[in-house]
Length: 68
Image 1 (tube, rainbow, N blue to C red):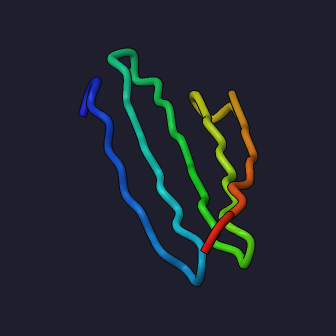
Image 2 (cartoon, rainbow, N blue to C red):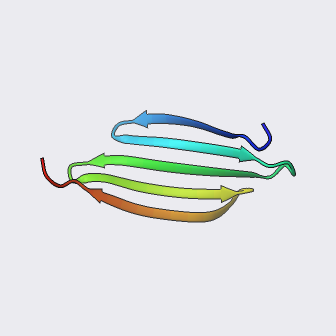
């Protein structure tokens, strides 16, 4: 499993959640979680990254649907 990235996903209602996991040689790890939720206006995105259990980075965004 070292230096490989593993990913899995689940769909619950309008939300797609994707997890990725990478394990380093020293036994540490990095996990990223993406939540993409469809709404009437477009899509909301929530992202969080952890390194060895500590929250390292977060981001939130919204894509707005235009046109048809």
